Image (cartoon, rainbow, N blue to C red; front, side):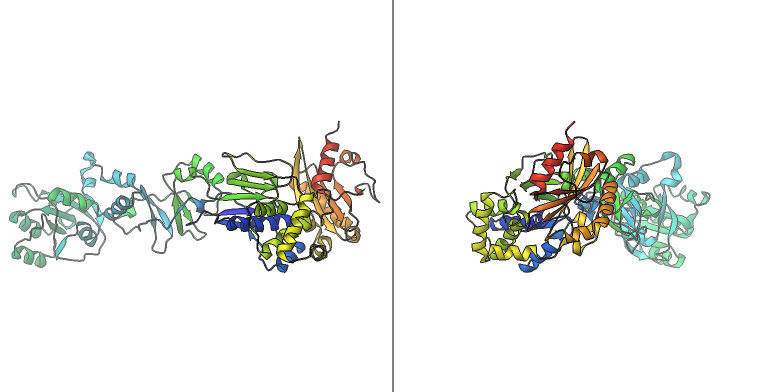
Amino acid sequence: MSEELTYVIGHRNPDADAICSAIAYAAFKKATGQEGFIPARCGNTNERVNAILQRFGLPAPMFLGDVAPRVREVMSANPHCVTPRHTCAEALELIDRHDVNVLPVVEEDGTLLGMISVFDLGDHFIPKPRDQKEMRHVHASIADIVRSLRAETLNSVDEDRLEDLYVRVGAMDIRSFGDFTHEVGTGAGQSIIVVGDRYDIQTKSINAGVRLLVITGSLRPEEDIIQMAREKGVCLVSSPYDSATTSWIIRSANRVDRLYTRKTLTFSADERLSDVRRRVAANPPQSCMVVDEEGKLLGVFTKSDLLKPPRTRLVLVDHNELTQAVPGAELVTICEIIDHHRLGNPHSSQPILFFNEPVGSTCSIVADCFRRAGLSPDKKTAGIMMSGIISDTLNLRSPTTTAKDGELLNWLAKLAGIDAAELAQFIFSSGGVLAGRGAMDALRNDLKVYHEGALSFSVSQVEELGFDHFWSKRGELEKALAELRANEGLDFSALLVTDINKQDSLLLISGPRDICECINYPRVEAHDVFELAGIVSRKKQLVPYLTSQIARP
């Protein structure tokens, strides 16, 4: 990735302020010359948000369902590989050239078969004096040996046949040379003789019918030796190396198919690193392989790669509590928080910019960032921020509204060339949540979870023009609220339905009787529905009230 990306993202089940402030703050960063800030969301948009985005011709921010670091972020993609048909010499060359300890072994189509390490290769080449036969063993073709030696071929016979051969150096006296033909199971036809300019040894080897005669030191044998090799069907090559080096390199012509480890620890590119660390700790491998669903190799990573700092960076807008943040936020770098809610801020390893101001909308804070920097947002960005302020303050009628919200709304209206009252009418008439969605979708449309002491609870809020849709779907909403509470393991769940025109709300609660009993607002038609006159703000009115009531002895 050539450019470090930072995602500006609102809370789960984002409302208009969360979406609009994410778009606007990313625009502010760009206006101040800071690149790589991308607006994002961790939930679906709703009818109101869609109407706002369509009005200003802007796309919805990109969706991020989970930002937990994944294997793909630390793996080395397209690693250097070998096939079972590669030689040890070729594997060693790759290991040396690219400074790696392990090479994946794959089929020609990329399917992972296993891996071969420098330790596997080292074990193969370490001398084993008690097994001299194995020390001389080469499982390769003549072509493999010629390629490894970079030798000149003087006579070739069936060079592509894969076979078991045994290498010997013709350094002894001619009178004792030839005893190899009596070794059980490794006769002349399986022998490779390495020799210098010893005409007598060369002649005797060819007459014995060895499989391969290697002349060292780039020496060219006599023409009659070459002719004799042709007549006897003996492979003859000239090596550029001395006899000792030539013998070692011939052993390196072994194919890796008998040396590589078949059992490997494999992962998907989408697995969470937190899960991977547990598996790797229990099975400490040298390298881990990353494969797709068909078993084809995608990448490689090591245990040290798991210690790399996460690449994902977040700016949280319109929230600061991790229970409301995109899943995985606690595992990545949160570099800024821009919010107007109560503090429930996450731990950070480094100092960060934390901008929290008691105003009616996060868009007000972002607009003030533009203004204090002496910058004027473009018309679309100004309109987006107006929409966030109007939506979150109920067009400056919510008790969370401050004088600063009104001042900034007027400033933005001039820049956007839009009448705030006309925009408010458009926003609040852009489709009711209860009428346009199923009961569970309506509850999750704007839902926040809170923790107070040992209690956990959720509060969903929908804003309607009147309560008709609520009463027509009350039974469905009650059932969905109970299901939500059970699924999330909460002590109770609440739904606040706000009438934008009358500035009143109804509260539906699903929870134990003692929770309902502590609510001292009037009940309406049922024991779990309460009439909250003048209550329109979840943040400033309802949640403080609930926390104070449930905290009472």
